[in-house]
Image (cartoon, rainbow, N blue to C red; front, side, top):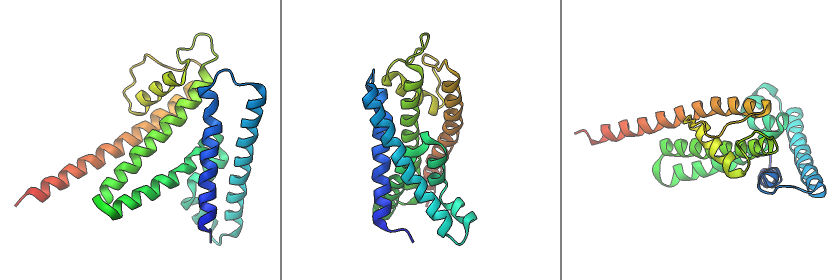
Amino acid sequence: MRSKWWDEFLTILAVIYLIAFSYPAFVDPVSAQVQAYLDATQWIVWGIFAIDVVAGLTTTTDRKQYVKTHPLEILSVALPVLRPLRLLRLITIGGLVIQKVAVGRQFAITLKVFLFSILVAYIAAVQITITERAVANSNIKSFGDGLWWAFTTVTTVGYGDKFPTTSEGRVLAVALMLVGISLMGVITASVAAWFVKMSQNEQP
């Protein structure tokens, strides 16, 4: 059974990874030495995450169940850009606290989905900025541009004033669109259900 301190340690590593991952989006140019340190930090974190997943798969009695109950841990090892999603553990804990203290399960779920949307948009903004900034005909040249593009995409608004021009950027955009449609659907449904519940409670 996993210990609490190990889970907290992995969450701290996710924060460290997020900082190392985000740094090039805010600082341009990044010196070769600093980039080497950033790369080494990310690889070390990835290695510890990989050890955690391998240990979980080898010690569990039901590997299929482990895969079903630990999708983010596995994805954070398989897909490097998703490693900051380990921070979703904090969102889950926060949602449970809110649920117990004040406003109930429905609001807690909506809040978790909302925070998840912000985290996904931030990760996409960092990646698109790093990917597009150096391209000559790109219109995403700063983290601010990338953040604006990410939020207009994840919310399915899509103004079109900022858009990716590289193949990698377009693949990222498609993934963010699919995630955005799903997340906005969940948030809309949760808010609608909340209003319906309020209306039912007001009826005599």
